[in-house]
Length: 141
Image (cartoon, rainbow, N blue to C red):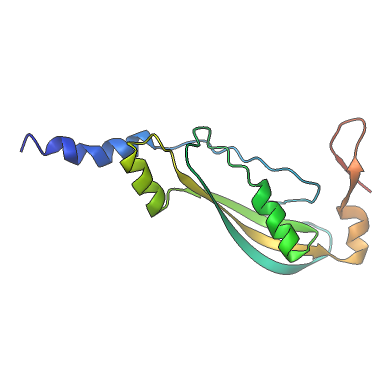
């Protein structure tokens, strides 16, 4: 009995090491990515769901820009709306974390939402026209 408790403790220790984290999302690009629905007129062109896996990611700051750029390129749309982001450990991530005793820190981030195209009258007010020289942020018309 005393020899089996260290083996039983291994999964508990792995879960403790890979506990809760604060997820920082990085993204770049000129086209809007909205967590909600815009007030301007639009048509939903496609629903998307992309997975981004990472290992040895101790900062938990996944760069979702390549996945977002791929969705915008594939759908040829103006913006992404109703975007949801979920960070979790899949079965494969969990196995890798157990095998490496928690050093791998593998996790999968899922980004899901709708790709939209603004209606012609909304394009005049919703899309960025370029960088604002005073603030460096995107400016709308």
